Image (tube, rainbow over all chains, first blue to last red):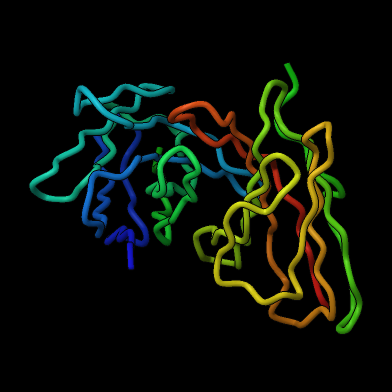
Length: 114
Length: 113
């Protein structure tokens, strides 16, 4: 069965520092790949997506992610973190063609120190 | 352009009761998916509706059922509520046209006493 692993449950960075959140997936083919962000008490906001093509994708709020097929990874990066980036981040894979369902990782909670 | 809207925002029920949660998809979307997010976990897929039919289903019991209306809005019904059904229920909508992202609402927080 497909699975998504986010190895880091909680990450703390200082404001202005760079950020990388890890995501690995287990699936035989290349799935659709997503990163979502969730603020406390809120729903999920789509940061970026990968369907095909260029393996480096740009998203909103200055985030980017790189798909590495050989490593089955889709890590999220940001060069300079802002205090407002503190939230929970979820990696998700979509399987089943255009009728895909999303399988999520357990999330990484990001804390930003001033 | 309204996004995905869900109602109610919060709901408190007791064990054994039934509940109905509602979702209006983003304008232009025709597909609705429901997810359950337990505290401290990632969302889990419940089912997906398209053209008023359940198209896919996750590993949830028959107590969970749904409906989609001609205007694409959707309901999630849960019968015989258990304490373990306490969670945030998220609705996501998308357009059934090639590869399209799913957009989420803010969810309904369901608490079972």
